[in-house]
Length: 337
Ligand SMILES: NC(=O)C1=CN([C@@H]2O[C@H](COP(=O)(O)OP(=O)(O)OC[C@H]3O[C@@H](n4cnc5c(N)ncnc54)[C@H](O)[C@@H]3O)[C@@H](O)[C@H]2O)C=CC1
Ligand SMILES: O=C(CO)COP(=O)(O)O
Image 1 (tube, rainbow, N blue to C red):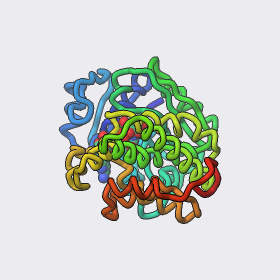
Image 2: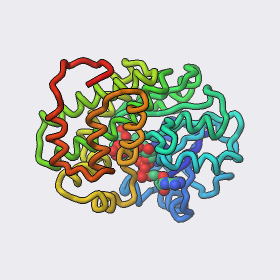
Image 3: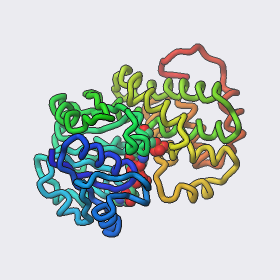
Image 4: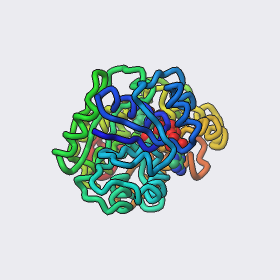
């Protein structure tokens, strides 16, 4: 396919490399002309993926018009909270028959919208032109060509299959799914749970705590997902438990690392400053995911606790007491917890 990746952060760059390695004609859009220049001349993105040799065939431009001209697949690789604004600026240059694919894992704060909803609202495109990609995909590992798999979700299975073919590389295995809601909720919710896992690690807790948080994090993700119409099996798959395990366990995760800094006693401002401008989506999405849960009468105690730490000044130590002091329950995946 003739593809463009709009956004040259760590995941956008790794995805552009996959698409080239899978045989597509690919360009990237970078906001800063000097980054586009670096990709074109040094074949490296030193700000986000230093030391990774990018394919010589991968080009970058900083003009939106040039980036989008004649592209069949437009990959949106910007953070969730800026997607609406970016797409609004890109809209006039989007080819009318292009397929949009979102990489972002988050829920918009101002509306509670998932990324596929934002894409539809801004462009007016048909559902068959809107897809999302989500799975256990830490950018650096994939840029190093370590084997991994992902989910390409689109309500139109034939379109999902077309994108699947475009992403099939020797080290990257895409699966299709028509459950867009489940794929998106899995990706957004796991960032919040990864913050909680980081906090636990930062406080010195071990693997039992981690496994408890991942498992109960999955339970609350399933509760929210199914309330929104997701298929539970999506959340039992790569975009659900798969991504939870990868993100909650890896020191490469920005969300887990952010949480770990809070667990070690850093303030929110200090943890934010330490990200070097890279996005830790869960810090914002804990608010929107919590709001969605409240709207739908779904209990998400871990998300609530992370929200309170990030936005209401709850001390991480007090969070432990708050979670363990809850009334005792049977272990069921029902609407309450
Ligand atoms: N890095 C990873 O391992 C993975 C990231 N993701 C998701 O992909 C999305 C993008 O993440 P990354 O590339 O990792 O983030 P990043 O922080 O590495 O890069 C974000 C990119 O978006 C640009 N950007 C930031 N604000 C912008 C704005 N207002 N307008 C235009 N561009 C803007 C930045 O300049 C940068 O190029 C996020 O939603 C993230 O959750 C998904 C899977 C893996
Ligand atoms: O989504 C990711 C892995 O699948 C990346 O997680 P972080 O954004 O926490 O680095």
